[in-house]
Length: 326
Image (cartoon, rainbow, N blue to C red; front, side):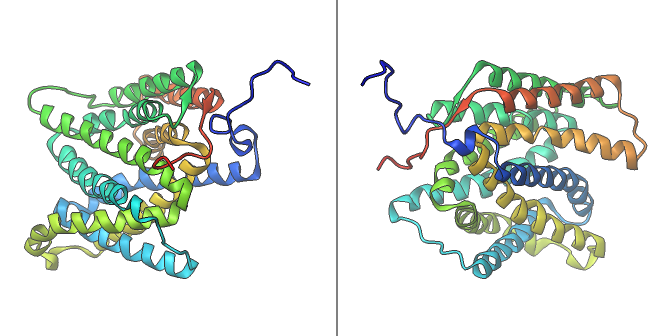
């Protein structure tokens, strides 16, 4: 007997694991928490190393290390990295975009502008990710979730603007501002473009293949800087910083990122990265005795509130996704 209700398309239905809480969600939130702390700490750690090592030499070596570690992860886990030949062009493009183009844009953008400007530009990542996810039909985002993205972005702006130095936009920094903004768009495109492949093959194979491909490109770009670097003057702690950045901020963090993408989707995962400036603010408060301003505290509250709105908002994901159309 007909109930009068239209049948639900299996491609537009929300999977049970996305709609209800499960033990896997706690693992996902734990992974995101670890990711946030790793990336928040990496700013200071990498900054220390860059005092001794040129930016491209630093990037080239840490990516070589991360690629080697991922090879070991794949080997030890006995994961089969077998992907359909028709997906190879997409993997090459994504590897170059997320691991060559993004890293070059980020390191030069940071060099050409102020740290506050760079943080504000990179805070646009969740917005780009949401827009791209909706545009390519990977997600349907409700008003509450859209509002959460906007509130979280405003919170980021307040955290950065409320700092003692503030944010200064002008002709001297516009090149770096636009370059960092382009880096944010590149990372968002990499995230959205990789998402269907991650759900098809898993986080480890896709992370490994795209990193190996992009790492080769980055190593080629960085080779002249690596050769020109005066390695004898590099302090031991800078080597430790490089090891941390390659091991945790890239190899481990990328796996955590894609695992979260697979479990929560693009928008929810991306918006959680807005906690990174808050964590950095707390670390500076406890370790460096840098007392936050009221604007920064208000911004932190906005980030927390906006993230909660996104978490509670309606976000539908086609399941299973198709890449490309079968």
